[in-house]
Image (cartoon, rainbow, N blue to C red; front, top):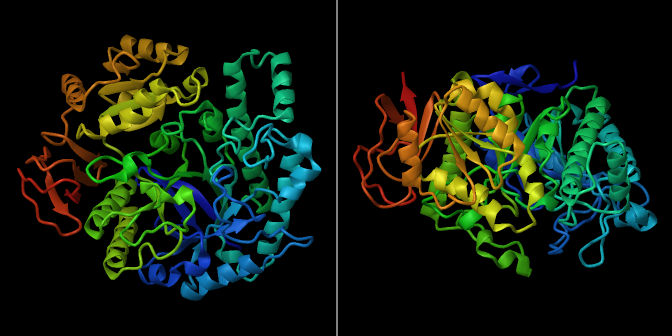
Length: 558
């Protein structure tokens, strides 16, 4: 019997996950506290992809908040202990014998390693605990040695052919964010940067130093992905959290070298949650954190981490970190509409997702599970449909611009993070790319919007290229960051792009589906000439005033 294989291939115009040469619905389940998880519920709902946490060491995933430790680490003691890993796998496979597993492997080493190697650590740490700098070669070698032990165990286990890939996690909240929130600075980072200056790769400026620190984060992510690929004979997909260029404005995040990751043949997928702005209230868009269409252009699968709060969501503990509004769920009706939004975003944007049931029990309600079961059936049927975007607007961003700004810059927040919400109110679907991808896609669109906290060289060159082709564009920078959705709609219409509704609304669309989320109680008309069928069974005729925060998913009838 041949061993399990997995890969990412284009299907229906978008990247899809294939296991053993067959496409599989990109819908999964994940829970931090496996003893509280509900894999049986999701197995009954048809889900076959399951993720679960694997920790190299007992660690707080948030160095500053020192949140509770979720599970013991494999390498806490003198000898590796795989009992928790094996038990978690057994629990999932008992509930779903045909499950495929995507373990989230937190590669953060035990603190004793740092105590033995102080020169390999960041200069700064929280609560006097400094984590390794991503620039440390000694740390990278140690991580590989620990990865080898883990993979050898899995490859020799009875469940070897249920493990379909690996998600590599480390740093702040496991998301490859610098653990010091300053770029993972340290002695080794300074040494490596000095070498880059000597080689005339970088200039000795603060701006270049932060660009280098992002480069080191991306380099390590790709390096470890390559190592896992080699250890598994290039049979399995590998990925992780990275590239939050639409969300993490701080140059010390380390997330501003996405281009290097997109160019790596060893990274198959990236992931991120929907943005947390405005506590994910109903009546507004919950945009992606990354440039999703650049990922698709480069053949990378994207997993949205749908940690969608419900009326069952409560803080994990009484730690102050968990007392902010973002940790509490809305009422059941509102949660249902937001569940539909997060699902529809994946379906219409052509990417995968997992329901992140963080502490367990968030979806333990018959109504929720009935809905999630229907969503899984839709995801399966969508494997036979055209899922390519039909947007006529492209939004572009230069990821290198953030190195020019200090952390907590109002300009970057207004021109990038907040502008996503303004765009979300225009009722106009759009695709979003890194500016370096413009040449490859400019013939697809009627209008272009540049999010430019500063007018970089790349942005100037891009606008000149559009002018040469007489293609219309709008640059949004510090002087016009207060632009309204209505003003953007005027620009789109001048470019020949017709919004999909006659007022403010969140609209997602691809060649097979159209999604509407209402943003107020005003009557609205959906501007679409074709025949539509509401997937979830709601009856709506236009013009209509369905109320704020209502979600409608339509299948296009050919």
